[in-house]
Amino acid sequence: MKKSRILAGLALAAGMAVSGTSTLSAQDWRDIHRDQQDLRADYRDLDHDYDRVNRMRADIARDRARLNEDIRCGRNGAAARDSQDLARDQRALDAQVRDIRHDQTDTARDRQDTRRDLR
Image (tube, rainbow, N blue to C red; front, side):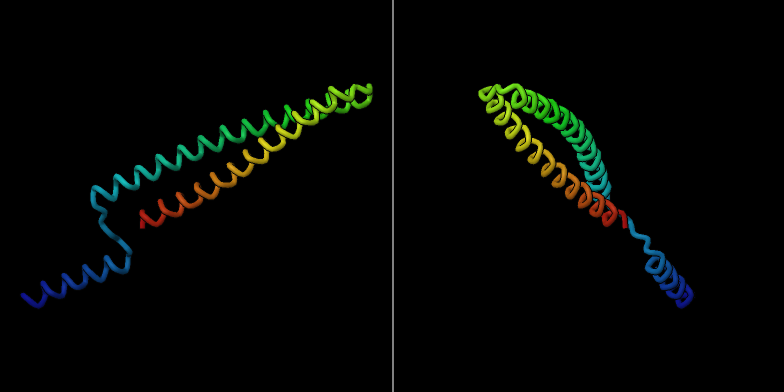
């Protein structure tokens, strides 16, 4: 009887080890939930960033058109101001694109962490 109970326990332990089944504590479940919320927030932030980039690109296109018009009409002072405005907007766009890349990296890292926690 004792040997069969030991054998059954070993078989159960081996089965759990093979299947990769593990139990997670309540704290682990809270951590997973927090990671998933963080991931949703990152996706929301990326959506806002993409919207902002689209608005910036439209603004840059208007600035370029205004700059070309000022140059064509010989308005050198207005062209200089438009050029400065265009350069400022381009720097802001470049910074926003860098922020998107950073957010994408952070999101990928969060996805990997969530997958690792679920194992």
